[in-house]
Length: 255
Length: 305
Image 1 (cartoon, chains in turn green, purple):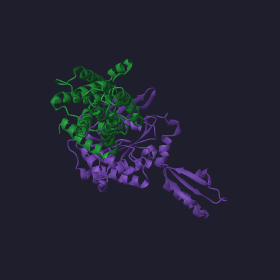
Image 2 (cartoon, chains in turn green, red):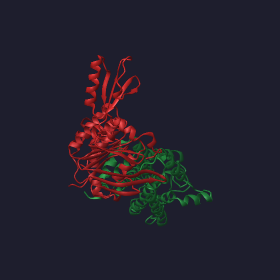
Image 3 (cartoon, chains in turn red, orange):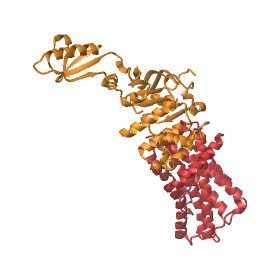
Image 4 (cartoon, chains in turn orange, red):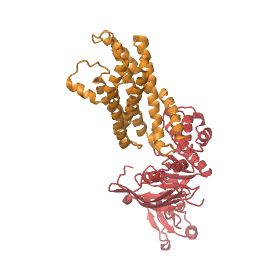
């Protein structure tokens, strides 16, 4: 069997284990939908005073951003760290399976879950809140999601290499991502933030993913909806994260 | 193939200033069950993980099945099976799924059900690993190591933490594997385990091999030294010629010719009309040899490995 087929086979087993793990499945799938409902209830009617733009128009792409980040960055950082400290990575390392094929299996699975979530959240928005899915900007949407998924997978792997042990994984991962989500136009719409906060948020890739998705979803957008600069900044983070991951990743448990 | 399964010369491994493995030589023949016996921190795990390719040596020569494990070659990993001291498995997969997953990494895997039967988990075949007992999970470790039908199996402290019944079962399994012609390299800190399983044992202490041989011959046990222990009534004195030493309430004689000495001793006792209370002939046990060889003066610094 070729190594690529071994990686794909790994995705299948990864997928079985994922759905049998109630915590992983619940947090990954239920959280974004719960957040979406709550935000829409709290902020309904606040379209920012812009005609033709509702809270749901803002929150549908924003929750897609949150869901993709959970499925890739958060899940990979936590699950790879857990697998490392449980000795699963070390066990795999002693078999003929190439290390990259194992990791590719995990990454592909995370990306598949992310895409599934995009479909679910988009359908949720369309059916419940009448938010139009940007069919006409599909190529730009797919490109944006692919760059984002790759970037946040790389960031998850890089973070896993920096997390000291499995017990610390949830605290470190959530402690990093939640504050950034709050200042990145995902949970809260930042209409007039202080200048320093706007600067800070524009440093991180989450803001650029959110802006790119918002542009794609905004009914007032014309043209392809592709935001090249946002994608470029995300990709730069992705490449940087990959370099960090290569340096810090370890197959040995750390206790 | 006459080439040894494992050939090690002057193997060294240092962690900072601590020399965990301080120049050891080992040779394991194909088809042999070899035990590396030693107390905790003696360098067993460091040694076996170098042979597995998990750690890099600081010095010396290592050949395992003709490969240098440090190169991490795929053909090498295709030919070995590893049971680490403690490793997790995906808890949400069943026993059969896990064996099949790992078997798929190898060119010629053994049949899943055969492997599961070999480790005695047929009844738990479709149970999730997270729901198994500790002993059963250890069998899963062994099943996964066997999934690829390896020529050489590494078992790092395979029965640590087992209750006596589970240990016996594990021993039966290892014996079963030996009859399949597998070469087995195991580490243990249990003397009885080495004695029960191994064709050959090397005792390691403070990173050095202090004795090597068959369990029967180890640590001078082949030396023809037997102790005769007995007691005589308080009013009887043993003749000088026996050269007895007093051990508690008993007397002890040491001899290289137990048959002759026994004859002499019992002849004397019958002549005197006395009974030799609690008479026993004692051969040096592996435990004696082990404790002597790994004694406190040899105990190493606490080693994190």
